Length: 351
Ligand code: NAD
Ligand code: TYD
Figure 1 (tube, rainbow, N blue to C red):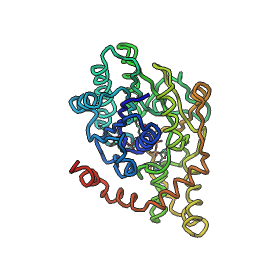
Figure 2: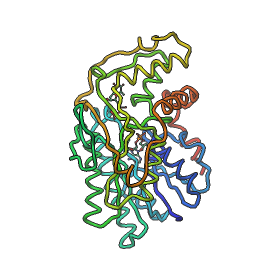
Figure 3: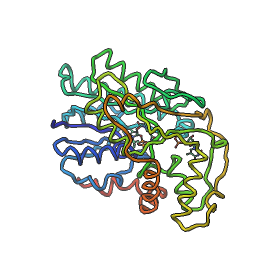
Figure 4: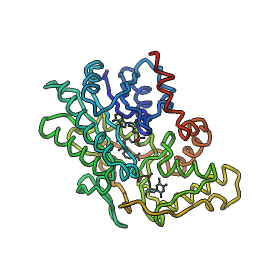
């Protein structure tokens, strides 16, 4: 079906993989990427698709009512895949307000624009909200988050995402807006900003800098390769039941310290360093405030109802990720120096 799809946050980590997948796989659909280009937005991520005829980029803020309505109107948007967010827990502890503005006010601004633009003509319309497993809170050593688990967010980031999830559900129940939500576990892969655990560890090992491990490194995350998340998003967008939620996860739990040690071993090997050399960089630092102990997703619903399953093993995904960061030195350098922030002016100033 020919559709005009708005993807928000498409210049970010997961968004860029979703944009690329949709631009290439659905040439009859127009893919409009609206992104504010915060520090996390990097148009270099999309350099390979930026000239495709079915791709448009709009620099804009999802919390700006005028800018959002203009996009819905100019491009006759009929589907939304909403990824734009402030996404880093540590930043949410330092500056909660930007999370409230983007994640709560921004999501509500998009919901209002969809309602206003679509009116009563809701056939073939969909507002798809991308969320996180962190809304469910923290697990002990046992159990999994299901779609029925009560929300118990514990950081400003997860509280703002939980709030946005509730608003999406409220717009479905109150106004009949066709919506769907998915809550995914930790993603990893190429193009992730090196403030998150895996790219930060790779970058620090590469540069022989200390690897900060929060607390004792006992916290557990469930890791999923980003392209498997993008494939799940594609499925939920096209076949997800409206008004419902799907949990997405890798069934792949790792203690932070074990994962960091594994990365040390992989990089010692790839960089021709002595066995054990990178582990010497491990530095235990003060724990994150309110640090959630364990996240683990039960993804049986999306597996049984939509037939999704991860296609990339952790071994293969980590290998691809490490190779990508070692081969894309220019990307990493531009991000570390801030040079990437000028890409928009260079590429789009005269368009
Ligand atoms: P990211 O931080 O890499 O990218 C976020 C993007 O949103 C950036 O391009 C940024 O410029 C843009 N953005 C921020 N504020 C904006 C605003 N006001 N208006 C328009 N654009 C704005 O994030 P990510 O890791 O790619 O995560 C994408 C989505 O997936 C988020 O909603 C996040 O909550 C969710 N999620 C992430 C993970 C993960 O492990 N990274 C896991 C589950 C869910
Ligand atoms: P992160 O990548 O920030 O994702 P999230 O907090 O959303 O799960 O962190 C993953 C885990 O790694 C989390 O338990 C915090 C920990 N961590 C460190 O130990 N050191 C670091 O430098 C970072 C960024 C995270």
